[in-house]
Image (tube, rainbow, N blue to C red):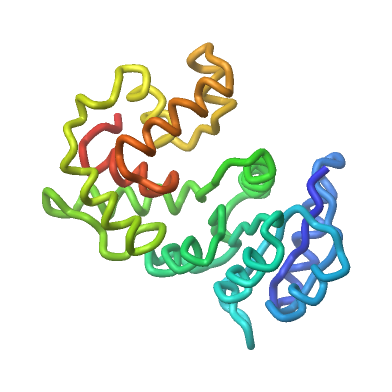
Length: 232
């Protein structure tokens, strides 16, 4: 069971999320809620939690600063951004602060539950709409484009841009298969089932891809793949 705290300054949103997760058949338990980043930090002092669902735009301490402090003070707690903010600038800020996932509030309950369970399983997750937006941005840009505000830190964006200069031949055929499935949003476990490999093998391929491309997270890895025309 994943113990989750909801952080959002709209009570209706918090109530709606709590009601939705009652459908999770015990996979997710809402153990607390907060209307601000400051309240979330106070709650975490006394409430054990595995994850925080964090809104971006809140009064007082916003979601980015709250995420940064959660990750610094409670490093075992994962942060999934749940927001209406879909600009790549906001995604960058969230990932710089330490968020491991980013989902839009327009997502379905099924996708949100999948995102929560994916993070709990030790992987990153980015909303389908976010991934598509980033891919469109790269695919419509001039050749050699490296985003100035791509996901991750500024260093991540620079490394992804530098990686775009590396010869795709350095990636093995199997790694290319894994990369394309990552680009479609599949998790390590799902890719393992598709390719008839163990999850551990897929994790190794993913780590090799990160090292070969110079990407520091899944988002910059997808940007690398799009920049080099490696996606289907």
